[in-house]
Length: 398
Image 1 (cartoon, one colour):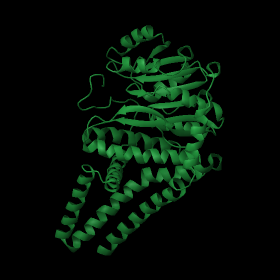
Image 2 (cartoon, rainbow, N blue to C red; image 1 turned 90 degrees about the vertical axis):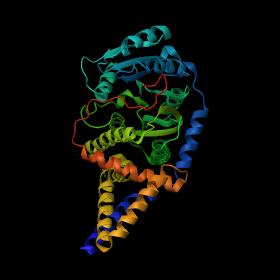
Image 3 (cartoon, rainbow, N blue to C red; image 1 turned 180 degrees about the vertical axis):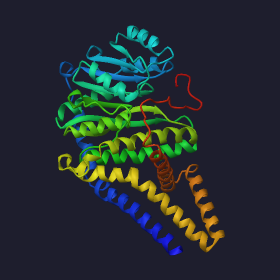
Image 4 (cartoon, rainbow, N blue to C red; image 1 turned 90 degrees about the horizontal axis):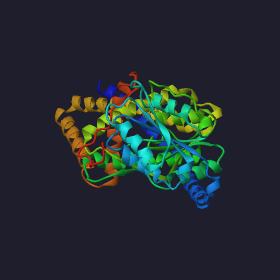
């Protein structure tokens, strides 16, 4: 029995190592990332004349956002972009608070063009996105969340890049977390955001990335395909829909938006498990991309490895750890318990002290746990969303 358990652990850990090793070798170490960033910097240097800037429709899905909606609309009005070339569509998902009333007053006060499109019942972010695109008047669409703030030059930068690259159908931006206190949850998220940004940059340098961030994305309306209303994340479904149109969906780290993150591990867990569930659903919905020549390196390399990292690796990691623990337990209970205790101490330290390698490993293991929980709920309908919890919110945060 001990031999069988050790073999299971060895096979599980070897498979996980192979998936992540291939990802590092084929994607992160491809050597294209620096050149990609250089070309983006070069494209952003050249200005676009006022008359050459295209009109853009901005979609803002909302649900009970009365505390942040004024700040959000002010943020949009402050963009370095001609106000007369912006159409703002506030997509309200049957809010029960004063979101729409406050937004209407802000539209008038700021001189924003656009309208509030209110759903008669809760339908979810994906349905709101589909409805918003159908009502958009312009060929370029920017999607953003109500509780994030976008840097003033974000839209102008994205327009420059998409206007000069006909093969690009969508652009997502870098999330800069708002950190006003250091907690275990913040350390875990900080390590994740840094590593995830590197992944998105490397994938974009090769072809396309998935899923990007919902806080900011700019899309060609011509790429629109209605996304699943009851399955998958909005950003995940959008990025894969763009890629299925034969265009690229890229991450541009020079474009930045700011978002508050959870300060408590419990809050983070609930948020991350929801996101993991929806991201896995998006990947499974579009699994027909895998190994299709039409999608080039994304279909041949990036997406198969990412799908394995989302679905296969968390299960194998758990199987390997359980098998190894049982094998050691059958040999010596004291040793098994001692090693488990030591591992817990290391995980705890990884959320408390600044040792980058330990922080990265801790974040990876915790996110494997989130993915594993996400897999348990992958069959669940995820049409509507709950507001993200915030501990000790600032006065203008939800």
